Structures are given as C-alpha cells and as structure tokens.
Image (cartoon, rainbow over all chains, first blue to last red; front, side, top):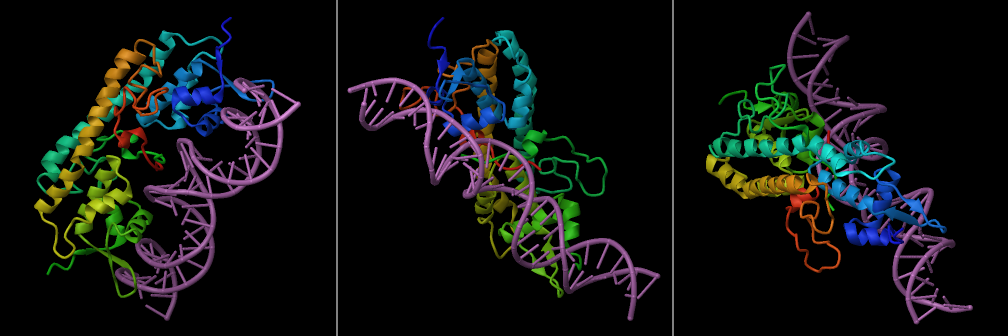
Length: 158
Length: 158
DNA sequence: CCTTGAACTCAAGTTCACTTTAACTTTAAT
DNA sequence: ATTAAAGTTAAAGTGAACTTGAGTTCAAGG
C-alpha cells in the first residue's frame, strides 16, 4: 500500500553504489529483476537492494557472477525472502570465506618459513606449490593448499 | 661448470606448472628472462624457477602482473639474488597479505552479525558497505573496510 | 638422411565484469 | 507546455592475463 515501494534505477544507484550500467548488466544476466514503468523504465523492488548487498559481498569474497547467480537462484522466486532464506544462502558460501582465510594464513606462515629463509623452492616449498602440478608426481605432495578461489582470482578491477 | 644450469621451456613447464604460453607471455612482458640457443629456442636459468614461484605466490595474493613486475625489478640485475634480496621483496607485499586476512576476518564477523541476522542492510551494514559510496554522506561511515585488493579482485580464471 | 616431437612466431581470440557511446524517449518539476 | 534530468537500447569497447591457431624450424635418435 505504500506508494514508495518501487525504486528507479537512479535511486538504486544512490542506495547501492553500483553504477546504472552494472545494474542493467545484472538484470540482463538475471541476477536481479525489474518491472517496467509505462514508458519502459526499470522499477525495482526494495528487495533488490538486499540482493545487491549480497552480490557485492559475495564478489568481494571472490565468487564469479555465475556462482553468485547460482546462489541467488536458491532464493524463493515468488515470496519475499525471509531471514531464514538469506541465512541458508550465506551458510553456503561461508565455507569459502573460511577457506580463504586459512589459505592466506598458510600463505603467511609459509612466507615466514620459506621466503623468509630465502628458499622459495618450487619442488619443496608448499607455499609456492599450491597445486597439483608438481614435477614428477601424479598427486602433488603439497596439494590442496589453496582453494580455487585463491588459485586464480578473477576479473577487472574498477 | 655444471652443464645443466640452463633449462628448456619444456623443463620449466614441468617444474613450474606454468603453461609454455604463459612463460612466453611473461618473457614478453619482461617478468622473466631467457637467453637463446643457436637455433633461437629459449634457455632459462634455474633462477627463473624462483621468480616463477614468486610470481605465482604474488598473484595468488592478488597482485597484478604490473605490480609483480615492479617488485621483481627490485632484484639485482647482474648477480644472482640472495636470501636477503628475496626477503626484502617479500616484506614489501607482506602487508598486502595481512590486509587481506583482516579484511576477510572483518567480512566474516560481519557475516555473523549481519547476514546471520538477515538484515544485510545496505545503509547500515558495514559488511556489505565496504566503500566510500554510501548514500547521502561524503565520507562513508563504514569506509575503508576492505583494501583495494579485495574490493575488486582481478582477471580471468584459468 | 629422415622422422618425430618440442619449440618457434605473430596475430587473433577468449573470458570476465563491466563501461562507453550514440541516438533517442520518459518523467518530473516549473 | 516546456524543458532538463534521468532513463532507454544495442552494440562496441576495455583491460588483464593468457590461450589458440597456423604455419615453420629445431634437436635428437635411428
């Protein structure tokens, strides 16, 4: 009944900090949804602000838009998401966060014992040896050190 | 005097895990150096393995190749780098690591208090509000939450 | 000598996450 | 009614970090 429960793109820009172009892009990619005014302009529900907050946070943690889209697709399409809905989703990528933190901590202690000592050996140093590509062995000895999200970060800085 | 102190690109591929194309790219960008055989094939010194280890580690931490190149340019051009040389360099981007870790930890605690509660408010939630773009205020209240390196990660995954 | 596999070059292509541009149209305020 | 600000589209552009492709040459073994 409140007449201000739809927002123009400009208002979303203001409140979310995303550029209008990014919002249009997200809509085209299906990450957010908009209805249209008589003249064809986008009208957003307030709930997209929460989605956008999630998008920002998730992308800060290193998820790709594809992944974020997958996560968001778990939200109910018809009803407004509840706390519980969001909670469930955030649980899902929380592991990622923990992974990243501990990966960085391993990196840090590796830094102390390894770069610190000047060795930085490719064959033996777990720190610079995060993958499964180590010479001569099928399964790398130091494998799994870094989660994929850290093995290769992703796109353009703005 | 050891006759095996130069390595072919294939040997470097094996020992470093980088694709040959990446190695050629890095050479063209000046991140690593190679001499040439009589027939024009690349011959790498063993020390490039260490450089490559550094490149991988640094890029895992989110440095761009440009930045990595800058760091590497601090290494002595003429003599083989010593422990001390590497140590000095690693010090320089260690702060980055600490920054990233604490940013992720702030994110995590934000996650607990904020997504956990279902609010995820764009205006008030420091977690999803890492920037300086908050509506209505010149200087954001929750500014500086994330270092640039986490605000926007960078390029293509492989 | 001949073959095979590894390496070469150079331009063009790819992916991601957007942004920019150009040419209009809609909306809101005066 | 006018007009400036805000919005629209499709398509092209950007930058980082590589990869791919096509066609050629090198190096080592038989």
